[in-house]
Length: 186
Length: 171
Image (cartoon, rainbow over all chains, first blue to last red; front, side, top):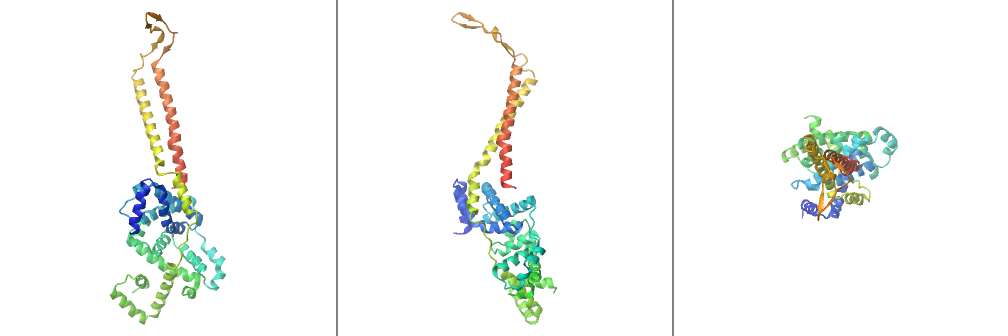
């Protein structure tokens, strides 16, 4: 049974009054929903709040969900918009990169552990603009097509493709700056 | 071919989106162009780094938190607002109708002198204390009461839940 059909069955049960079945959908998509919110907001507590708000909003609008579309795409679009709104409301700022690099600068000489890799990825991503960052995050989730990424971010698929290509190239340059050429080639 | 075009070709190659002809052409160029080969290795490393990066998970109480909010405000939660709006509309229609009737003077000659009404029951005649009802005043009082109830309903069933909902969802 494909995930889409399974999603529709769960949605039908929720709409029929089995409220607690919604927890299965939350469990299934919370990881990516949180990842998207985190990439927009850059701060865990706010990202968690935005992702939770998005799930609650999706729940209240479940009857309006277009069954021709994928639930995940619809949900991620709500997450994206909710995170953008929260960012505007709270004026959440992404981590200041020069300070971050300065704070962790001595680590670049050490072995590039996995946690360091994650941190450097975040640093490089933070240097991109919001739209590039989200598009790239969705791309690297390897779950969504360019068309789906376009639906979530509200951009045409071609624009998404160009944006992702440019963002990847920019990211490569940023990583080189942060890590030096040798570290990148680990 | 410009550097940017080369980069885009390399990315398409890494994503497996290059057709057979372009792939063969790129392989030939990679053999003869060390700079292009280095660039490919850089982009490969970048890809590996990002593709291998774990998705950060939300806190353990994420799902229970969502479900507690969902259970607190079930799907039908919006209906009391709609019911409130319907009640307010009903009240306002009544008020408008009554005001219109008052304005055209339908209640102008509706004063009733209760004392002039004689109740007869088995031949017993009795008179009541002298009390006069003015229909116009009565209707005006009803209109004012309706307006007060309408404002109360507006506050309790529409505005308060709406602002609570807004602050809760923070859209």
